[in-house]
Image (cartoon, rainbow over all chains, first blue to last red; front, side):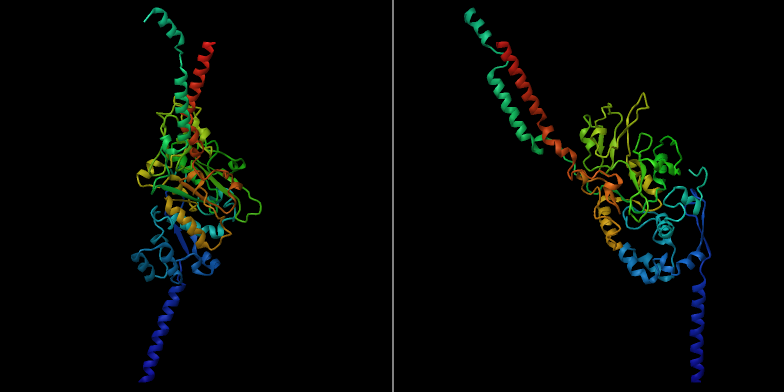
Length: 147
Length: 304
C-alpha cells in the first residue's frame, strides 16, 4: 500500500514536470508585429531563430520573473499589471509598453521598446545606423502612401 | 518793466540753462547707476515656468532614420524636401533648420568613438528665457507656460533681431514669400501639446532618442538613466540645456563631448539678456545724458 502511494506521488510529479517542460519548449516560431501596420508592412519576426541566437529568454523578455523585482523598482508598475505579469511566464510587451505616457517618461512606449531590443544587436548590422533605408531593408518596408 | 530790461532778460535767457543741464545730468547719472539692478530696470525676468514640458534627447540612441524630420514636415504642412527623407546623402554636409525644415538631423563621425556615427537633431531649444523674445522690439514672441516659444506673424515687422539674438542660430526667415514674409521655426508642436498629444517628432522616433515629458522629470530621468546603466563611460557627465543660457526646454545627453557634435559650449549659464540688461536699462539714462550734452554744447555754441 505504502509503495503504491509513493509510486503514485512520483508519477504525478513526473507528469507535472513533463507538462511544464513541454510547455516551456512551446515557444512561438514566427510572431507578426503589426502595431503600426498603418505605416509599415507588418514585421514577420522569426522568434525561433532569435531565441536560439539569444540563448536566454531574459535577453529580450526583461520582465522574466527573475528580473521582476528590478522591473517594478525602476518602472513603478502598478499592482494590477504586476500581478498579471506574475501569473504568466512571459507577458505581452504592451502590458507595460503601451501608448507612451508623458507623465511617466521612464517607461518607453511599445514602438521604442521593440526598437531598443532590436538595436541591441542590429545597430551596426547592414545599413542600420548608417542609412535611413537600412531599417526598411532589414525589417519592415514602408507602406506607399501610408500617410 | 522797461522795454530795455525785457530785452536784456531775453538775451540772458539761454535755450538750455546751466541749471537745467545739471539737473538732467544728475537724473541721467542716477538712472544709470540704479539701472544696473533689474528692479530699477522694470525688466520682467522669466526663469521658466514650473511644470513646463521639455524634451530629452539621448544622442547615444539616435540611428539617423530621419523619422522626426518627416513627421515635422507633415505636421507643419511644410513643402516636400528636395531629397526624400530616407536619403542618406543629406548627411554629407552639416545642415541648419530653414524655413522649409524646422528640424534637421546631422551626422558626425567622431574618431575613436565606439558607438558609431553620432546623429544630432537640431531645432529650436525653447529657452526658458529666450533671447529672441528679449530681442524682439514688438513682443512678437511668447514663452508659453507649457514651454513652447511661439512667434506671432501678425505682430512681426521683419526686423530679424531674433535671428541675430538666438545663440543657436535657429529662427529662419521665409525670404521666398513676397506678401507675408515671416520667421519660421519649431513651435514645439504647441497645438498638439494643448490637445494632450506629444510633439510629432517624439511620436515618430522609433529609438527613444526623443523623450517628451515634464522638464523636471526629464532632468531626473537623465541622471537616473546614467545611474541605471552603471556605465559612466556611456555618457559624458553633463546635461546640455539644464543650465545653458538659463536653461532650455530641450535637454541633451551624449556619449561624446558636446562641442564635437556642433553644440555651442561657450554659452553662459545665465540668460543672454542678463549680459545686456544693465546697459539696456541704462539706455534711457544714456539717451538723456547724450541729449543734455548735445543741448549744452549747442547752447554754448549759440552763446559764442
